[in-house]
Image 1 (cartoon, rainbow, N blue to C red):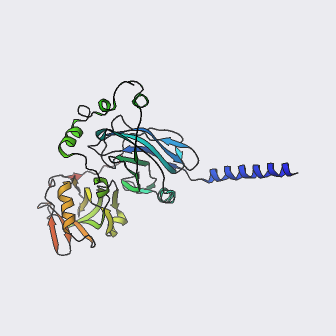
Image 2 (image 1 turned 90 degrees about the vertical axis):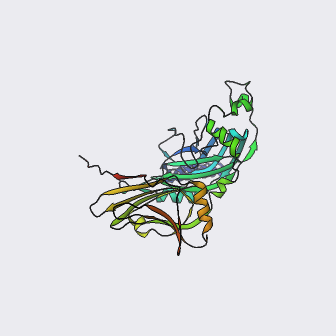
Image 3 (image 1 turned 90 degrees about the horizontal axis):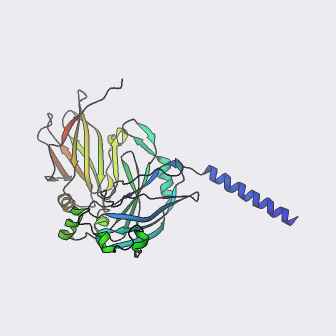
Length: 342
């Protein structure tokens, strides 16, 4: 009798487990890597472990230097619909440091689920869509940042700290087991701009945490007879937003990192749409301007022009204090042609 009861309990447990797995929310997304533009790296082993017990590997080009927060390699793998990631494990080579780093961390599952459930809105079509990728950023000093990306929206999930480790070159480069780590990690010919930058400036340890500092700011336009339709904001910390419709109508001040790119779309009374884009800010100038203002009070970046779109100025403003942002291309502006569907 006791034996039969145990079997019934086991069957009930398995049934419950299968039922829970069936109810588990799954989404269409892929993993990808990211790395600073001037600090190439390569993932030796990297996986995201999912809520349903499966895992996906993090793809990586031979020498990844995508730009901090920008997605890299994408490989289709596993089912189209995947459970949410709950854990990250990664070991990678930081070429300019001549080091390997490794780490394993639990991810903030509730935050990830909330974002997947919320989804994003495609500003081009106004249709709700999902977050399409989980981006794993790896930087010198063992800095790890994870973001979720979808439809020109990117949100930081967490920042983690890896530890130095060793990997035998015969395991890392099985096709050339006698090569030394110094030889393989030499970037002077493969990524000469990174090598030259390191010789000149060294490695900017800590800069990726500096990028994460947030200020209460927004951006707006002051152009007579023009309506603000859309703006894409890319921040130095890898986060990204696109404001349109209700979000641009409200356009509240919000805690954001310092911007590296702003792309404005505005429309005149005849429906003509124009794009003005700052790609990119001069890092030294924009950071020094943010240091000039009171970080505890709201800050505004204002795009000003005449009605005929002449006399273009971009101003960092706080109260009555105004600071012109000068190191930008004031001519990076074009008319957005509307395509009519046949």
